[in-house]
Image 1: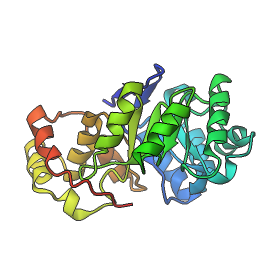
Image 2: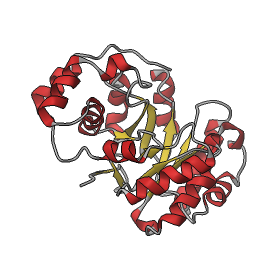
Image 3: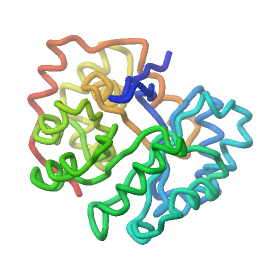
Amino acid sequence: MEETFTLNNGVKMPEIGLGTFRMSSSAAQGAVEAALADGYHLIDTAEAYYNEDGVGRGIKNSGVNREDLFVSTKLWTSSYNDPDAVDKALDRLGLDYIDLLFLHQPTGDWKTAYRTLEKAYADGKIKAIGISNFDRSASLLKSAMDFAEVKPQVLQAEAHPYFPQTEAREILKPYGTRLMAWYPLGSGDRSLINEPIFTKLAKKYNKSNVQIILRWHTQMGFVVIPGSTNPEHIHDNHDIFDFKLTDEEMAEIAKVNKSRRYY
């Protein structure tokens, strides 16, 4: 059974969802339909992926009630100075509200864009505010948190066992801001996926190495969004809530940390 995290504003967010990075519009539609049929409730997309329309069609075709879904997307930097950016995102998705809207990059006039998100939040057009890739320096992340009148509910950033975002998590902790991991499997790096600890635990729990890593993410408190267009992989990525890693196993996994980003 899929589990949820409660964000710092009381909104509940699924712990795992489908990521749609590098999917065409039609591929994203098919992946969303497969994921929702499999019991997913969280879908992540972005203006810069050029597939929000496909995600919207997939949602519509699924027949799943809107209130049972959690949709996150991101504004691209070219929209930061557009006061109508949120309405345009709603139009692309074919939705009347967005559960979580991010600023995709900390470039351009991101401060103006953040105020636009705060207004949309006050107006009920978005249920939560996110910042993406603001973890490139501690000072940038701190200044963003200071600037925000509504503290962001989520930071989306690269995170995996080789790079568990130790510094960013310390900065976010006082605000209750949740981390959402992209590249959760380390860009598909086989050396990470095949670390002996994951192979050992996969055998113990009768799971794949990938499933062990995705479960590690949720037990770390991270929202995780593995992407796939293969219905079998989509199902397997979601099938991680029938076992729990022990504290000792989590401590053993912590030892593979290399403080290494792929991006």
